Image (tube, rainbow, N blue to C red; front, side, top):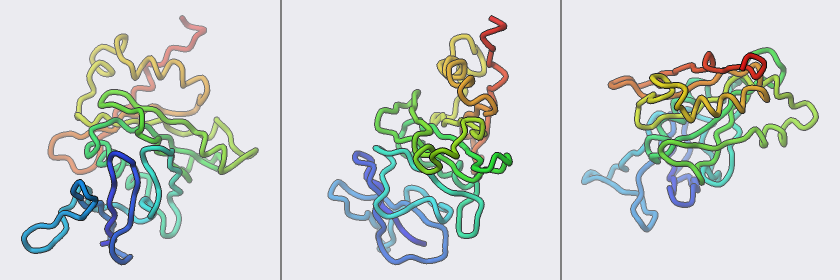
Length: 212
């Protein structure tokens, strides 16, 4: 497996060791940035089974939104990126926000954006589509945003499910939906003993202004 380290404070990703064709992983480090190993000399793993094409040497998940191209040869799947996003969120103890995008408007996801976690907390997250605008320029369309998603690292849906009128997520939906009208709004969270993320769609909580 190709190993990477992630400095939680700076967000910096570094490759350690040689590349290979197995799934990637993020290994644990001490305060000096050295890889932590067990008594057998094996690296202790923070996040395992990461699909190829998500991690790159020198990227920064804290300070910069990351655009990840998906679905092609040598590229990760949509499910793989979502799984990594939730794993990273749980490892950091912060929400992470992201978007799915179809560059040709075909409803097939070609790009996913993970927002930087610099200003995120356990219950709030930030992210924009700015990096998609940079990538596609005049060809970018807000109508091609297929999904806005964010994680709940504590595994709870909270007020978004039980009391939507009190939910910060639902308030965000009201302001974001008009800008990305074709998008669904999803929470990624962990059901106990479930390896892959569960998805809660709260798009139905949107109330168009004309109906208020």
